[in-house]
Length: 250
Image (cartoon, rainbow, N blue to C red; front, side):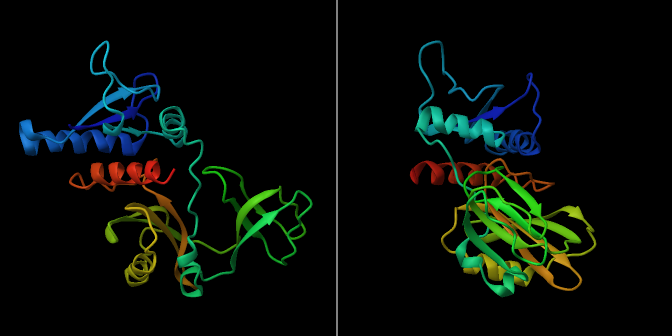
């Protein structure tokens, strides 16, 4: 059975770069393999399991939702009873000084917790993707919750590394000075170190003149901006394998 990608639209139009690129990858698959192609896709404004006809649904294991985080999470909640997918942020295996280049820690806070550092800190939720995040000044309050906390660090250039089966398969600039190229040796070391990982993920790194290349965060490979990454041969596999990884961990 072919895999069916349920691709999000808004008012019938594709709005995410990864959705558009996926449709091109599927067209490429059809062109290359002909009748033996591996994938089909259906466009939908809603994360509703598609039907083969008026009666029969596509087998659930063959449907892969692709869209915003909200779109994918709604599908996971409705059909797999998965209510949340926690962010990876910086995995424990990459909490090393040679990768961080600044102080980073995880903390459970209460509403009365204050920033006791003498520097600005960046605070981001460990509980929810696109949850609370903010830069908090010294003595500033932080809401209650589970957070990853980082000393503020200058970022002159930001790059997204694409990783599939522990191999670097793409590297795209998404913010800042595109002429500042990251140290791919450090990125390769991070990939080798991060063994308890999804089958596909993105590794965001920053660069500045003082510190060189350092980790920003990691995302499992769903609802991720591609910024020009378009390996048609593996893009559908990366999405399928990551979605299966999420559902198998419930």
